Length: 249
Image (cartoon, rainbow, N blue to C red; front, side, top):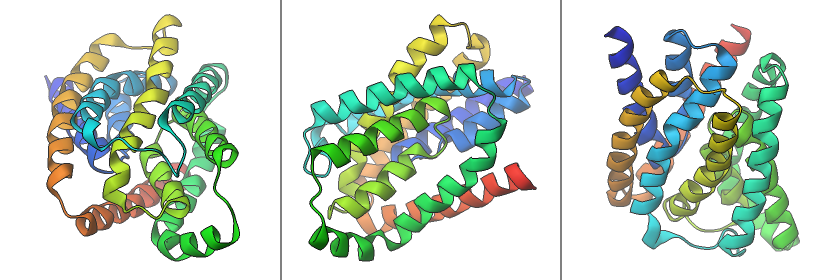
């Protein structure tokens, strides 16, 4: 019963976090491990469990879907899917210990981009042209990250896009949920096909995430952009600190 409440509650919180700003796997992965799932299987199972909640958020945000940094959605999704394939296979073929050491530094980079993106973005856009190759390369790399680990990938997307695109954080929520769900969707198929998923724990976490994703997406549509940005920054800082403690503490 303890594991049921732990996984369902963690799923709800993770789904709501993903809908609002990203970083839900920071909650779901430790919950899986606490329930006795080995770390690699916990990572794969967490991805599968959070996928339905992510798709619920995509549906709620569907009216706000827009191009990413001036690039249409279709090629951006394809690049993200290809990255997701590579990342999910890499997870199952290699140990995650080395990546766990590198992850806090990636999150720190993302957090700094979120904090300073508003100032750096206009300067960069005056000096460089953001076109199809740069955006697709970025999404391919983020797709690899999402398929391999996925921790706070939504935050990293928002951080990168905030530099390349002058749109506010709230307007980027809809394409973010779509891209994260695209990378996770292809990873779900691979993890399930290769037998990496612990289905009972996944079902409990997924049920909570489905409800949390719906609630978080509706809440996100009503919150002011300034609040979304503040909450995103707070979550980014907390996630970064937590992963440093996890890796080096």
